[in-house]
Image (tube, rainbow, N blue to C red):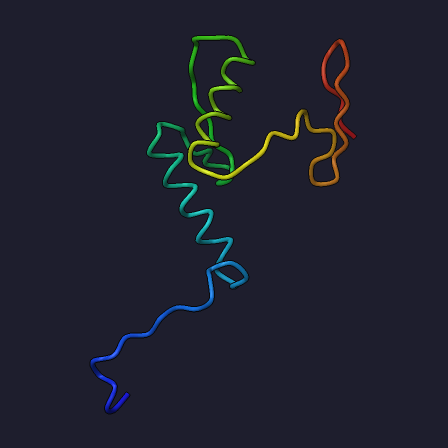
Length: 98
C-alpha cells in the first residue's frame, strides 16, 4: 500500500479453520513419514507402510506410536471398535468387520 511499503503485517488468525488446513497438515505429515523411511501406497495416498522383520507386532505398534507421539500431540484411545462407520469386532480367530 502506498505509504506503508516499509511496514509488515502480523498474522492474527492461526492456520486452523482455514480451507487449506487439511491439505497443509497432510503435506507436513506426508513429508515427515516419508523422510522417516515409510513407503507410500500408490493406490491410496493416505496409506503408508514399513517393512521391518524385527520384533513382534505389538512391539512394532508401540514403536510407531512412540515415533508419532514424538512429533505430534496425540493420545492412545486403545483398540478401535468403529472407524468411518465400519464396526470392528476382535474375535479369537481373527477380526470381523461390518
